[in-house]
Amino acid sequence: MVNTLPAGIELRRETVPVPYRTALATMTERNAAIGTGHTTELIWLLEHPPVYTAGTSAAEAELIDPRFEVVEAGRGGRYTYHGPGQRICYVLLDLKRRARDARGFVHALESWMIETLGDFGVRSWRSDGRIGVWTQDIDGREAKIGAIGVRIRRWVTMHGFAVNLDPQLADFEGIVPCGISDYGVTSLARLGKTVDADAWDRALLARAGAFLSRLDEACGREAAE
Image 1: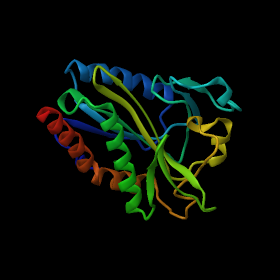
Image 2: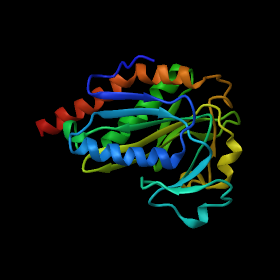
Image 3: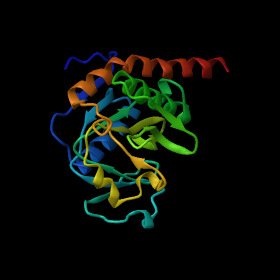
């Protein structure tokens, strides 16, 4: 796939699952190198073998059935699941070159997901008090289709978001996903949408420019203030 991102942002796209610990070590090293100006920014698309990851606010009681390895991720948030059929976008950007606005960054990530899901006919939204992206499930109830977890070190971002294309949804039952027990988890496949990783990546990258423009616009507003 041709890199359509602006110069200075590397696109890395994996076609086989990457172990979570390997990805975390790579992100941590890359985050530090971006911060010191020794390498370019990165958008990294991939999947992981089944794993539960614990954010900095993870509560032990929310780990119900640790059927997979549990890894402390160092990101914000609580427990989440990653596995085949869930497409992840890790975003490593230098916000010193944009707006030093953590909330605005997360909002831009949410918009990126919501708009890309819309390209596949899935209406989704933010929900006050609940992190992530939500949609109407086949039973008519609200359910999570996209998760977000980020870390910002010296204004360089790492981690990112995950969208459920066609994962084993039963694997989420080993945890209370993101600490929210009153709502379920759904996927594009459950909603009747057949979307593989290649199709998702292409649609997501087609909207990368709009995502980056939001960060640039936020930077302009910050400078004006």
